[in-house]
Length: 515
Image (tube, helix red, strand yellow):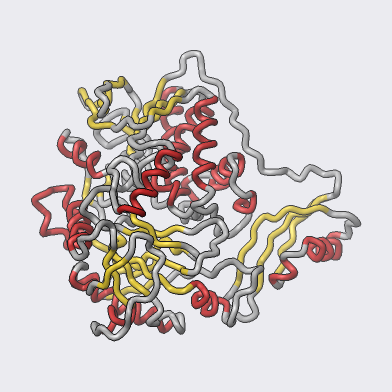
């Protein structure tokens, strides 16, 4: 006998398996049931906070149907090789799926392995030196390795989200991600998981070349023929998954110069906003101090201001603000959280939608105009400080009022911050939209507008400023056979989950075509 049950519990009740079993016994009539969680979420809309649980229960001797993933692979005798450019979430999951289908992936990654990459990040944070090939965006696992590890997406129609979660658990992620409403791994745990996935790919016949930057794609008669790399290699390929991420500006450049059709794409631009985590907890949970049984509180805010969306992005409870520049002479910030989300601060991107009329000053750059507009803001942020990777920052209330009344509060950004009027960096329409949007958000979250909050600039890599158009059915480039634009860099994803789904989708299309 088995069944399902939904419970609304206090945090204390939800933490007690004994209490949950008592409730199941009352409903099912079973003497010794066992159960597994299907979904768990926090409902903080009213006081007191409640935990919502969806459970499945069984007889003690029944199969619990554990969610286990195993690689069912075996290269075909006529196995074709598929080249994947980029070893971020899109490229990684594309490689796994190709192996499952019996095809051999050859992954070309411009950056280094995780352990070597970690050393470069330490130098970046400590000395403010950016390695263009090894940073928070480039290297094994891509931006996903150091992106906090949030695993939720709105792209639920694009593939099997549960498959991705099972793969991550099989490679070391906490099984709780299988049922939490907002699953999260943590930046401290992602590197080991990424390394383990690499070993799976190699074990089953895949190949991964690090420090192998692709510098060009050779196209003949509208078909992919080969790729060239920075080491001087020319690698033949008839099927190419291009999964380079949203910050590979050199890739966009050589595609454009080679006549490959690309399109400028809208994105969002703004700042990182950081509050004390205790403050966000008290606002969201309506309490003086958060219970240890509750997760660090998060938020999601959106407003329409002057015809533009103003919204929070990639909210990181208990996290830190990190430097995400990929070239010297630019300042870019992002955020992440450790697995326990136990830091002193809560940060979030706070950004404004950017559209075609905004990058007209760069229209001479053609379809790269949005990218150059994005880059110009990052360079302006750097010039405002001119001190390594120190970032321009402003007290939240000073930014809104235009006055200089409040001092900069403490901040988690390791390279350090310098007080700068952010209106001198951001376009006027972004400044105005942020000021009005934040005022409205402060009315929704009492206490959000405070002198204890800081704005750090700039948050500019919310998504790719370029789209590489592809056919909706085949997922190949609209003009070039064998080229599969994939993931965030191609404009078809926004985060770990949607990028992974897109990588899987491209791999499946290649398998179908070969079959």
